[in-house]
Image (cartoon, one colour):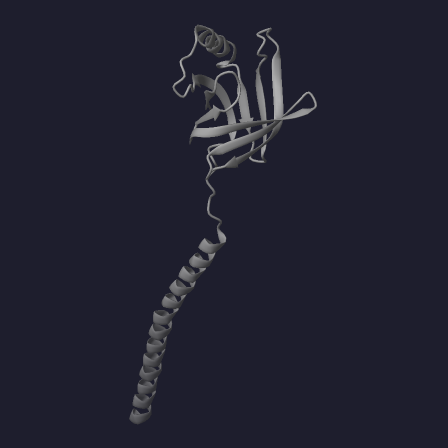
Length: 176
């Protein structure tokens, strides 16, 4: 009887030892696997989340805030200077240019005659960053008119465009 009791105790201790060992092996392995699974899941989730695309600072609505004559060394006459002063008075802060990301634009501005009426041009544009150009095709009174600009500056909140048309070439400064 003494032997069977000892055998029983030994068997119980062995079973307990095996259970403790098995538990420690099981517990020791499981967290590592879970961590590995979690980290690989995080990598998979990271791959599924699209990167935020920075909005191009070109798009949006601008107000004409300045007009700078680009004379390329040519001396302005008093008549030229009067024309520029009148144009600034009529248009600065009153001309709105909206460039949409679908390639269309709208320009709302006081009529050049100064009669108080408002003109609206709509149309399409194309931007060539490499060439530094912004080419517009304005629709006015059933006609299309190309308007080509060179980009002088394009930063957050500011767009400066140099014209190659009109009586005097100008740099038009637009701000958001």
